[in-house]
Length: 192
Length: 187
Image 1: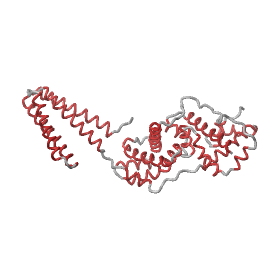
Image 2: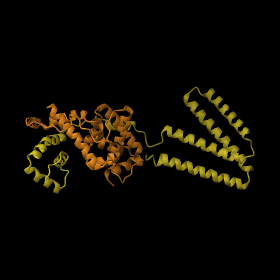
Image 3: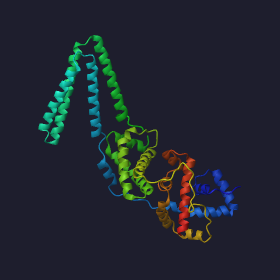
Image 4: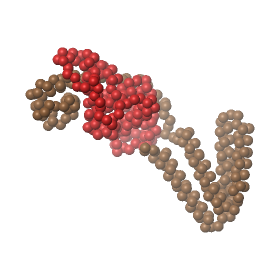
């Protein structure tokens, strides 16, 4: 029998080998001084590895971790992303309806800009305190949204039934797409 | 359902005490894994906290079909790799066979070196091994720490690092031989 490789001697010392292989090695060791010496060289190391000092966990470690953890709720950035996505969705919806609308694009854009300028003015006047500024932006956003919806509804009423059905279908498909995206990203999580 | 999976489910339902139990159960293993692999206790404490925070926020993605411990160590391992990447710590390539340096080449030990090794108390030798971990390349050290400090099986390490079991055994062996040679030289 050939001499035992050092790797296998470690596995022998760590009891990682099958009973059959262990028996073979024991037989070989009994008649091979070279392998016996090789085994002895590694025995102390293997035994000492069980005595490697471990690092001590500081007291209160788990409390520190818990204090840094937020409850399982969306973070601010996730809320902002959701708000941005909602804005994009509503805007897209508006453009879809606009495509079938008798209103001119220029009118709507002017209205939008007027609304934005008006909202910005309000925000600048009332935005001395940070929290108030935030609330004004939210209000401005809601106003824009309402304006868009009002325009959409106004356009919707003058459309033919076929176009109305088509527009509703497009909207539903887009809504499903967005819901699916958020479900993948935030509910099921990123598996990558 | 095992204990870990039950604790995970309770945490997802909003029971933070269950998560505290998870942290308490694994904090020592994770701190030692990161601390000994990175050779920096303070950094390990900071990264360990980050690992548990990451685990908490990803619990809903945990698949109960798999072992929680392996999943947890996978997150810790990835977090450490991210840290290495950020710090651009030089690591030896694992794609090529380990190059035996003069110090790691098999050496013929004179007969008087062996008794000297044996004379050392195991505890003292354990401390020397701990200090000698510095000489190991980071990737070999990580596998050695998994095996001999975290007491993980070769199969568990292979699953964690997504390596063949034979490769893991071979790399842990390389680490041990390097430590042996270093200790023999220093005695």
